[in-house]
Each structure stands twice: as C-alpha cells, then as structure tokens.
Length: 268
Image (cartoon, rainbow, N blue to C red):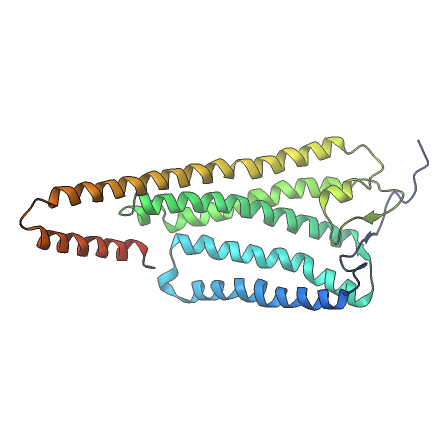
C-alpha cells in the first residue's frame, strides 16, 4: 500500500459551483435573488402567517410550517458558505464545517421525507374521518410525531457523520461538489469505507422507501373515499329526480353539503 499522508486533516477543498462559469457574476446575482425572494420570503411568510393566525393552528398547517422551516434551514446550511467562498475566492472548508453541512443536509432531508409521510396520513384522516379528525389528530400526538421525525433523522445521520469524520484521509482532499456531501467525503478516506457506504445506502433507502408507500396508500385511500362520496351524491340525485318535492330537497341538500365543506375545509 502506498504511504499515507495527511491522515488527520483540518480542512477540505471544495470545487466551487461558479468556478468555471464565464458569466459567474450574473449567476451569482441570480442565485442570490432566488435565495432571498424564493427561499426566505416564500417559506418565511407562511411560517409567520401560520404562527400568527390562531385559525391556522391545526395539524395540517403545523406540518406545513415544519416543511417550510426545513427548506430554510437546508438552504442556510449551504448557500451562505458557497456565496462567501465565491466573494472571498476561498475553496476550503474546515472539518467541523464539513461535518456540520453533512449533518444538517442529511438530517433535514430525512426529516422532510418522514414528515411528508405523516402529512399524507393527516390528510387521509381529515378527509375520511372529518367528524373525529381533531380528536384523532390531537396536539400531543402531532407534536410527538414531529419530534420523533426530527430526532430519528438526526440520530441516524449523527452516527454516519461521526464515523465519516473519524476516518483518516490522505492524498487529494478535493471534494467534487460545492458543499460537503457524505459520499464525496467517504471517497477521500485511506481506509476501506465499504461498510460505512453500505450503512449509508441502507439507511437512506429506508428513509426514502418507507414514506413512499405510506404516501401512495394514503392518496389511494383518499381517492377511493372521494369516489365513494361522489357515487353517493349521484345515487341521491337519482332518488330525488322522481320526487315532487325535489326543488326543496335539493336546495336543502346543497346547503347541507355547503355547510359541510365550509366546516371541513376552513381553518380552525
């Protein structure tokens, strides 16, 4: 085996996103506008609105502002470092900074996957069981679901991140990315990282594949519920079509469902 050098490194080299772009200043300005206008404003305003308006304090909007917060934090973990490096002509990142980016990126991504699965279940409960929705999806349960998604994802990535930064590194320290990504860092290690890579692959697959069938099943059940509700409407319409009191009953029927829709879909 070739001699190993720089086993313990204090920093890595990042290949910048705008390094080889001819119109890099225009790209920099475009990315900055997108960051402030779309990421911060587009996600920050819904958070403020949901937290400020008591009518929006329901589980659906609770999970929604959690997703908006994840989008903001994920961008803040990458964008400021990338832009400051571009302005200061730097290409290095410390080991601690690299570990922080790995942790935030993977933890937030895993939390988002879990929350999307939970939101699909929440929507199914709101549509299929509207009368008991607030009893089933109570606030203690919603907080436990959100907290468990954050903690489980953070614990998962913490294990992988600690193993990754503890590996000895040698040779080129270039990360072929504009931010620290776990697989890119593992490739720089002098040791055999196959077990760690397999662990990352398995945990990532679980985080991606477990919420997906939950989301798919929830929306299939929602579709079945909506179709069933539509079939009931058609049957009632056929039964009323031969009734002399049809205008009065249909008017009453319309106002009842109008009240139901207002009750079920308005913010509480």
